[in-house]
Image 1 (spheres, rainbow, N blue to C red):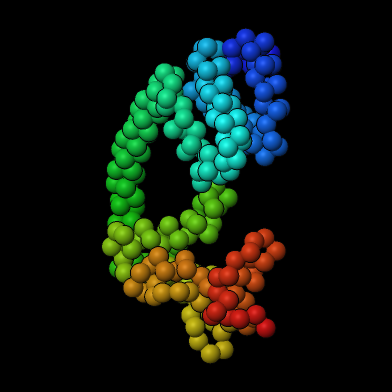
Image 2 (image 1 turned 120 degrees about the vertical axis):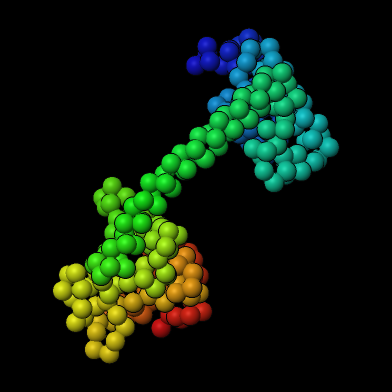
Amino acid sequence: MNNFIAKVVGEKQLWRQHKARTRQLPASYRTALEALERYLMHCGPGGDGVHAAAMFDDLLDLFEQSAANHTPVREIVGEDPVEFLEAFVRNYPDGQWRLRERERLTKAVDTAVHEDQKDSLVRLQREEDTVTYDFRHGGLILAGTDSPLDIPATSLHLNLRSQVKFGMQPWQALETATSMAAKAWHLSADLGTLEKGKLADLIIVSGDPLKNIQDAANVQCVMKNGNLMSVSELAKPFASVTTGEDVCPAR
């Protein structure tokens, strides 16, 4: 650990002096400064000990002056402490190098993602062309996922959107996840369509998925065996949300 600290902030003696000054700060300023320093140690520009020591001491100088002037911590770092540090390190040679490398990394990844998507979209279109052809010629098409290799809920919606993106109408895509699925499993008497006498298992969404397939994901309420609950009620054990409360108020 001593070797690591020496590399980041220079000689250990300077670091001890730095920490002694830090302890003299009011508690709130000291807490904020130590958090910023910890971030710089793990995510800062690195470089030699001389430049690192100068950076840490300048940051401490800023906090000492601000504490003396009673400048609130929030006014020092702004709303985004990470953005504050990004701007701060750009004033140092190693920070400029880090910025250039970050820009190169971002550009390289963006280029790779764009190229990868082109190939993936070509393959996806070929697959969906086959699905659309079979559907239009009377084939029984089921929307599915690669569970457990994929996340079922998310991948199901991506499946439906891909069908629509490459030729099917929204209502046709929805049939592959509802009436056709029930037919394939010989459950059409109870599931697959909204009809009197069938099981009351359905969702209420915001929007019109018959026009915009993405609206199928805007679930507000779920009915299971005739029991209607909002997403807010369903999520209550895990998160505080208000989705569906105005549509399906809790009883």
